[in-house]
Length: 337
Image (cartoon, rainbow, N blue to C red; front, side, top):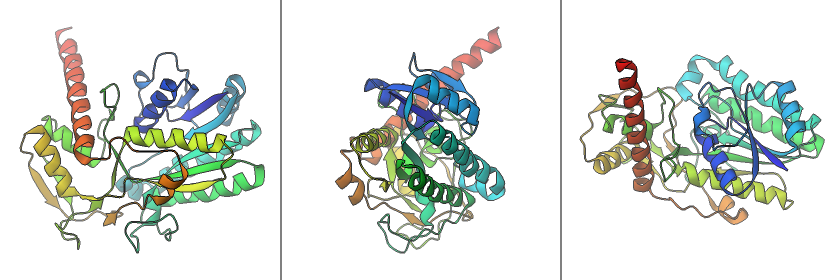
């Protein structure tokens, strides 16, 4: 039986596909390559280029490859962009999933893993944040994911589907062997921006908000290594295959680092001074977001391997240096052609 990964050529999705392939799973990918790259996929993994909301495409893939589980990554993920284009986010994150679920129901798929976000909590009343915390998203991004969670719950209840919702905190890092990583041009992830600055691709780092009531005035985030996150999905799949009931789980480490602390970590690892420019707070940003991870650690067979900001930053920097060399080489080839 096969696992369908939507958005499997993207940043997190490609790490998921790699983890599944290395575990000997049969896996197939649907990705429109708007932010993904086919080169990120292991050799031999079938890729269908198209929209995860294309019901005919999804139904055909489910039937052709005997899909028994879906891991759904495809969607838009930039909070400030969602503030400017809410309808685009409700389309890409909520309506696409509606169509995907309809195709899954028609195809008899009864296991579904959904990539959600800690942004559904908004500014939490308590930190670390438990899964039972009130959901008060501050952005269309968070709201679109929360709407999808609600829809998934209702569809699963009506059609005998079991699911795991994984609420990501801040995903960062890259494959420890630097085979794959975040390659999207113009990515807005803090660590990605920091390692781009460390490799000379950016002149500075903008820090949005230095007047929060935190130890150094900047926002605090719980970073999780992308490879650990992929393994959390594998553990969630094993849980569902063993008959586990539907559940929502936080994906983080339960340790927060401030924005300024994160920048200093990259400076230290890269041994390079990176100019920092302070800017006003951004609409939609949450002050402090740290996961209560007791539920995921108690329920899934999952033990993080890279639970350390320096390790995450080291892997991100190694990938960025490799990517920079490869892209620089391509540019030089083009100039000499």
